[in-house]
Image 1 (cartoon, rainbow, N blue to C red):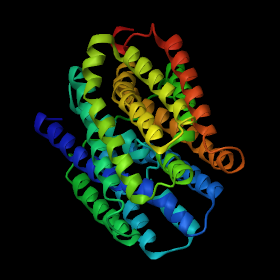
Image 2: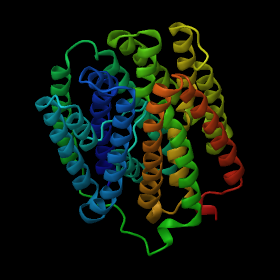
Image 3: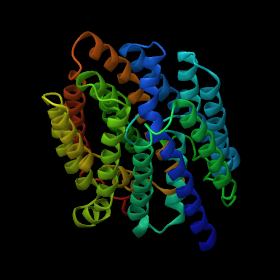
Image 4: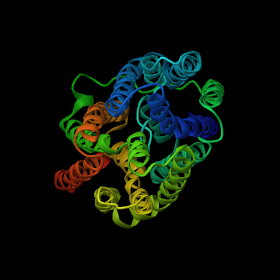
Length: 386
């Protein structure tokens, strides 16, 4: 691919990422409260999050096969088309389980960060378009844009009614279609020989990432929004402000990721920042007021996502080029599938036990993940040195 086409592809992916995560920023807050208004209880909200993540996992699995046949451009256009159908369905119905189905079809993000098929394809497009020494910085910018756009989306959640916001989702999906239509026609690498794309290293990484996502399913943004609403009585406008600043802090932290990675290495940066953030996460369970809970949430967000671009760059570094699609899709699929299990449990725990228990469970399991990841891979060298 020429330098011009590579640069154009990165810019167009950034445009699509920004508009998509802007919509996710308000949909992740709006939909759980909207479903409560339509008659769902806490367990129903947990089921909504689980089903949405399960739909995302299914789309991630299907997208790799599509990408291998029609390339990145065709697979991303297909996904953006599904988003248009999703948004139109949200506008057309007030049946709660049809709303849930629409969210599944549109791969609506319900967590602080994005998972799913768009991410698995876009990160490979970026990894191939830039040289290795710029990969962490470019993926940091990619994620920074996503969190910044989601922050703006969270801030506007109280500015209009559900129909206006669902209409914005349609408009955003159309912009995505236009951006993806301009991508250079460069196919992703063909499937590697049987067994090569699922090496023990990839499987071990995917298993540990699945543990992290299983733990993260206890504290997804939609469930944290529900916690703040049910425990402290925060409404849509207040929640919009809370998550606006949370996303801004998350976005700002991504600027530190390349510098920390250069100084300490990708894996140490991932593990240390992630572990400390989970101490703050556990603290939210004991917060006596909305102000303290919000402060702990902000401290957590300032550190918890530094591992996102470093993790993506690390995975792209430790596998060979022809294994990148498999590594990205496999790890994303395992993460999303594992994360889909816990929200259903979280809704039941919140309703039957205590609202704050998921923070202790999620934070504790994430600390276990950090320790296991370090012990398993601290001596692993990049693929080009092995």
